[in-house]
Length: 369
Image (cartoon, rainbow, N blue to C red; front, top):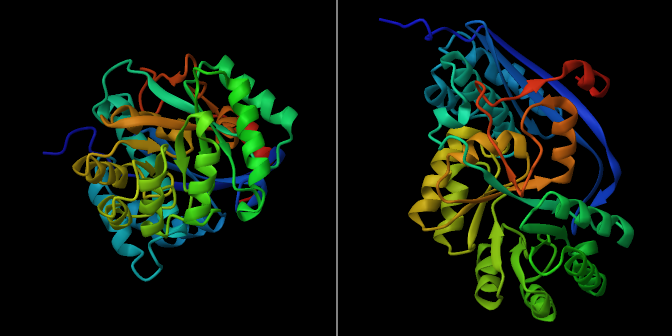
């Protein structure tokens, strides 16, 4: 017999917000001046769950046109089977990329709704230890920053007590390695000796070029070299991994389980990056991180720290969550809840669901759909 909590999803609402950056931003292969959030709210049993993705507004069209009717009327508790129903529904729309991000927004909202209906914090529903902190690393250091901006951001990370901090390199598709090295040295000088220095090339280099750069920076004691070459080149990633000291990492552009299995099986990375806002949501995150565990690989959450907090806390082989400047800023503008790092970590709360309350009035001026 159905229990009182086994109530249907009655509403699927989608809204889109675009927020200008607070300064020009860029990495090795892309520049941007705004960030778009596609927000989903699922309602059922007198509760509302919130989820989102960072991606094009067209993701909202996928949710309204392909997913909403699949979700509406299903039980608030029926997340996993509902996820697979969404995947089946988009067969002819193309699963990777935009469609996977749309699924992720719905899936993360559905898990939040499920936890709220059950009266549980989402991280506890997912199996996390109560009160366990989730380590973060400072992330930003855009190639568009001048020295003053880079120093100021590194100093802010220091005040947050982070043990790790990451800057972007590979400017202009790897065409300015002299400036890359100068910025890496400035970051090391500002962060001090006790903070691990990470770099992210966003696939800007060729394999041998990446190895030469790592050798030139050996005195900086890099411990993390993210996407030294494109993540589509698994052989190249593996070759770089075999020839540099820092951990080689990738995975942020993974949209389904099979992508991550191939990356793990290729021996391409030392740590697998997974983005819950891209890979299909919490349901797919759980399957992906199980594959990583089977390959004895740790996991790092890519961006969207507030969205990742609960599922990251429940992942035993988690290394850390990326405390990305753009997303920290937007999540702090739009939500009340535990989105600010202290002592180098995020701390899950004890309220129901993901612990977030959306400030619609603050977000409204950024609404585009």
